[in-house]
Image 1 (tube, rainbow, N blue to C red):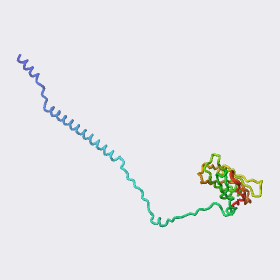
Image 2 (image 1 turned 120 degrees about the vertical axis):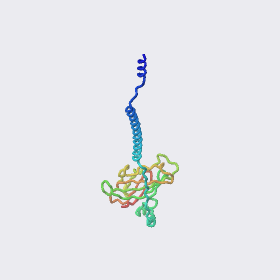
Image 3 (image 1 turned 135 degrees about the vertical axis):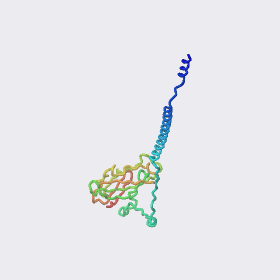
Image 4 (image 1 turned 180 degrees about the horizontal axis):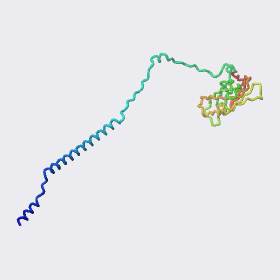
Length: 224
């Protein structure tokens, strides 16, 4: 009986680990802690390295330089103001025409038409000098005008003073003339310039020019 109790007490005692096993366990725990510490340090350094790389890759702000204009000190002294004197459209030949023949009333005194010049030019399509460029200035006189008050410059015609048969027509009423000029588009006492090309044979030097709605311009000399 006594032997059985003693045996049971011996069995209930916990097994005692040898010193070598305790030493190995302590070393293993230490190595685990060191490994964890190195892992944390590696992650820290990796994060810092990534941050440095991103900082280096970020574009640096570029400073823009505004170009400075060079000032030439002699520019102000060398520059001189030039004035141009206005030139008149009418030439000496037309100016010698009888006074009053170059200005005619039109559209029942609602407008005034001035014949500025009749100049012989070369036809760019054929190379012949059988075209007369008639330049006009239309001035509005009336206060009240309507849409029907216009002058069809492209409908102008011409004749020689001594002839009642031959009539010289426009080269192209649409492409070679200003076309209709409406008084509604002109302020009172203001004017608008217009032109028309007439087919006139070479050798003709004087014309009677009729503009629709206006009196005839008689004995207009052609400028060559």
